[in-house]
Length: 329
Image (cartoon, rainbow, N blue to C red):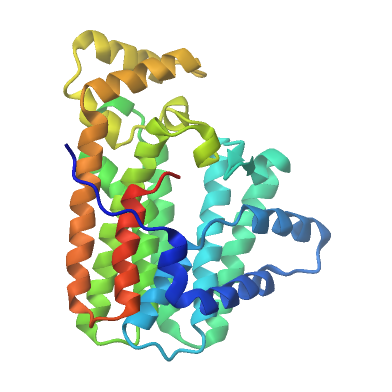
């Protein structure tokens, strides 16, 4: 049996920074406000699509865990969420996704052109705000992160031979696309701390991000659209090869690999074919392997927190590890 972590709710994790998170909501509205009707209309939809503010929460908790004191922390947390939203808008357009978090995507509700422009708008608003703060350090960190995420998206797009995409390729992809922003959020939050604590929190974010993304990819195999807000099996329908499939492929028979290859060669695979491949992955141990890897990264993240002094914020960061790997959506 794969060991489980005690599940933690995001509400519990956010309790130490609840007041600051209210400020993040206000800052998000301020940052994206514009006197242009179409952009304002899209912004309102984006605010409805806004997620659970997990990345801003990590920034705020990291800041508090090393002593706090920066009055601009809510603005920085809002900037991190802007960057995250921009990547989602662009990703949905690239993938031609029609739903996210139970709502129509920007490209589905408006157009792919509007989605590209809005992603650019959100990125540029983040940069303008960072420049206006007059502190080059968060700009340096988040500019690097944004570049990493862009390279990660191209890495995924260029994976032409899907069945040759191995675990090393996958790890490089999730480091760039997911872990880099979680790490950057933690590092920005801790940037006033002593170097060892700041480095530990940056590494914490990397390990947490890998555990988070593996879990996200697992949910695509195990949870329904009603739970996740996007169609189940979407990665397979879009021919994305994630860790559960990578781990299973080496344990499949030749006949089973033919079924997977058929799905990858089908432009619009049927629900029955997707379900058949999901079952093959499960029987081959792909889901169990991916879960075990997520827990390994969770343990790495946990160890990094030993560099911090005891506090409610450090406890909440520890709980965020359990949330990342035991969540249901």
